[in-house]
Length: 331
Image 1: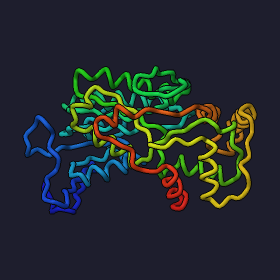
Image 2: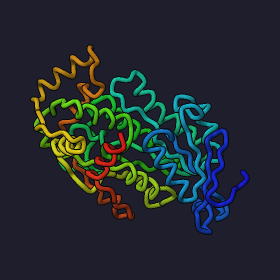
Image 3: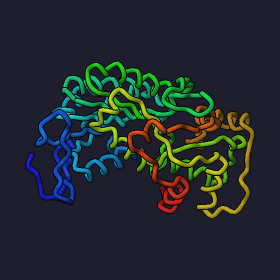
Image 4: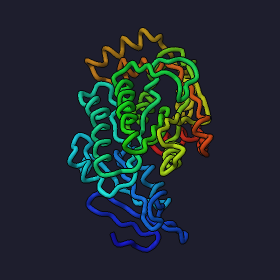
């Protein structure tokens, strides 16, 4: 590949980009390889919220980035993945579906992960970083860390827990790292739907006193960056969550305040919310009102990030400020 001058970007048909530091530093080398070799990183789901932020930060740091989308690296196509991962040092697997009712959920989240692992192994990839989810904890109560038991309940949660096991099964073949982010706060379809639901003055389901710890997409991207080519992260699992904890009621009221809504937040009991959610399965009047989503809304979401902080990561972004930015920017 012909290198360009600093601050220029090159793009191939596989979506590969290389942006040098604005200083005199070269692209990042992989430890254990020649210092002259550029560290090449493939990101699946690169057109998603996390993938976009991550690819931007990787390029800024001087890595060679190969953007993998459904077009050039469909996780259900071993052939496309095999081609996309050629000459790659690190694969960061972000591709997944969040839709609890998708008929392809298991295939994408579990089989797709297995396909990505196999393609990585065949291409001699040195590290595989998997973006899991705290959803794998399911209905486990209390403060959750890397040693807390997994008790997944919904189809999505079960798929992410099973995918983790697929990843760990490959740790004798290549270095693997698993990150379990809390609910990710950033600009995407999911948050646009949440904000739209609040804007319609739909009542809060439940009392809303349960605590929610989320993570801003920028902080998550930084956590992934720390794990790349880091021997302290090989064979490890890390929980990623923001520094603030808000109740569900506080989140709803923060959104309402940013939207300029003056009326008091209405609430309905969980049983009624579930009844509406089941009716919505037939009538489909709100994409956010699904029984599994309602169940997940009622959970206590508090996490310990001490393990990740021990290797140098620290959440920097304010959740309230991020919510404000999303609403002002139209999410």
